[in-house]
Amino acid sequence: MKVLRKKRILLPVFVAIVLLLFLSTNWMSWFYPIHYKEEIRQSAEKYEVDPFLVASIIRVETNYKVSKESRRGALGLMQLMPDTAEWIMESAKLPRVPLDNIKHEPEMNIELGTWYLRKLSKQFGGNQTAVIAAYNAGPGNVDGWIKRGIWDGQSGTVKNIPIGETRHYVQRVIYYYNQYRDIYDEF
Image (cartoon, rainbow, N blue to C red; front, side):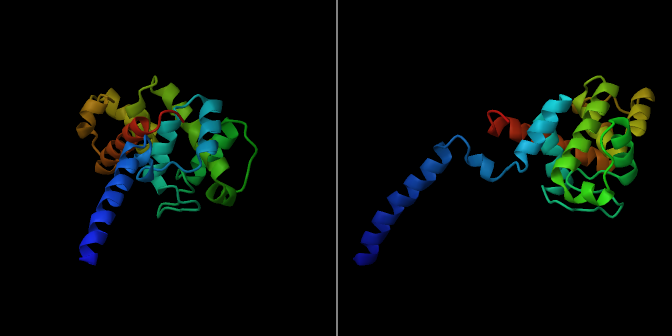
């Protein structure tokens, strides 16, 4: 009898907790968190880039794990290749910092990656899908695919991207971008 009474009490409490979680406007943010929000916000504002795009790229690149280095040598949260990071610092007239800082310091890595996204956005006329592809495969490859008619740069034709890794990358970034836009009212 005592066990039955406990179950009768626990079930409504459990249901109430679950309802509170689901009625909360941001419960999905537990599954799709955005770390380094202030750093992303500052760089996105400075370089006029959608902060949800920056967050989505970080999520796909490293899942917000600082100090990550890929097998190919890409560094930090936004997985910048050392040569690209050096070129960005020079082009953006940013203070030159050691590559180790780019790997370990989220603020610097996010700023460089966000500047690069702005540059790609200008190059591809604001076409966000082409920007995402270029961030992964390089702007020369994406420009070539578009010029040769292999891919038109649009999200509806991502299946035509000739490199499987890039095709999957673009799909994942777009997925997280849409999730973040749906979950978070603002950045």
